[in-house]
Length: 213
Ligand code: AMP
Image (tube, rainbow, N blue to C red; front, side):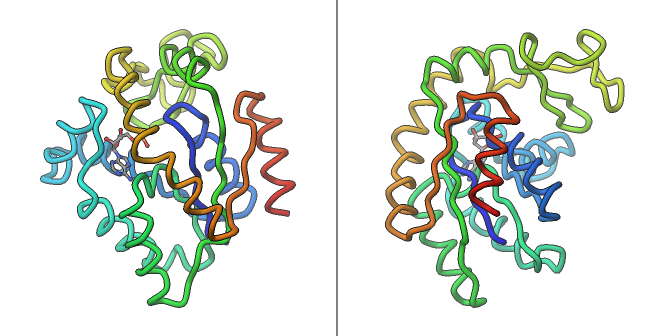
């Protein structure tokens, strides 16, 4: 199964993508995580991506497209994958479809996790991440067992630069302008399924399982 997660930053795409991958044994590909890993390791890709990310802007299409096409053609993706954070623009979606078609593949489902902007702002302001394993917490809705410390590895959890309030507003603007048009794009391809992302994590997941079967 080949799945795309659509939705604004903070809609819960990453959390749902992880749960889907666990249940259906698929590979989770988060472009945001790939960039953050590269920033941590100070690679050329990381240096290029950092400025865009900190400003809440998108990394240029050609950089992201090559990265994802390269990743999904690896052997471990043969049985399927869940893309989390890609595509984010129409040109990314079109180039990706072309690349998939060359290998006789196509997307089965684009799951649109729908959440109102006010809820997003509230969620992101409390979001914290582990810099070591990328686990996501929320100060109010999903706190770690010990305050300020990751449950998995004990690292001090942090607020991502791009989760700071001034950047979040720009990310939402970028989402509405550049990513939201993908909803119609996948609707036209008959693979769009929309779920109400304002519900609890498990309720949203149940709806997704109903869709995927
Ligand atoms: P995310 O963790 O998915 O919210 O991504 C964090 C940041 O990484 C975004 O705000 C962008 O700067 C960059 N990024 C991730 N995926 C993409 C993409 N498909 N196209 C362009 N930039 C991206």
